[in-house]
Length: 246
Image (cartoon, rainbow, N blue to C red; front, side, top):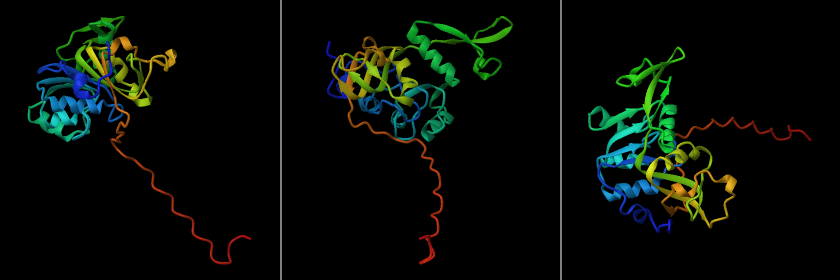
């Protein structure tokens, strides 16, 4: 089966529908499948449940889908950089299911591993545990969390071959790999597309069996969520004429 499609619209054709759940990889703006997200926006699908560590920023990443109000519910860990998100949530227009970041990661990993639920100490005795089953093991209290499994996962990889084997780079490795295994259909955008056999098997992070469709994005845009720079040290005073060392 040919996995590589000419563009994002073609790669998502026949998959998208109203009310579906979508996992979107990335951390901050690093490793987000921005081209695929833009195609989801352009498709017009609505009432989406989106599972992502964060919601991008205004007009970037998942911020595109928030602007067009295509997202009904977010399952996330951190959303503090998106004003549109906050506005919709405070107005009662957007449902949120907050998760501690490690819990969210484990819920996704569990979903991909076929584990329907697990127990964790994180959140016990807090608002996180309200309405959830709790249990005591060896004198310690735990909260039950459900695994997550989506209709669609969209991920970004640094390199991939035409069989769908993927390699991620640095921070983009945080959520993309686990999401790639935790959905009925995974669609990947890759910066470097190579032939089968050109990736060292020991370097493959997501095996191609998980990836159904792909697109090549050779000029991936790399945005910085918050630019923090160190002030330059003052330039040393120029040596006065004739006063410098010989």
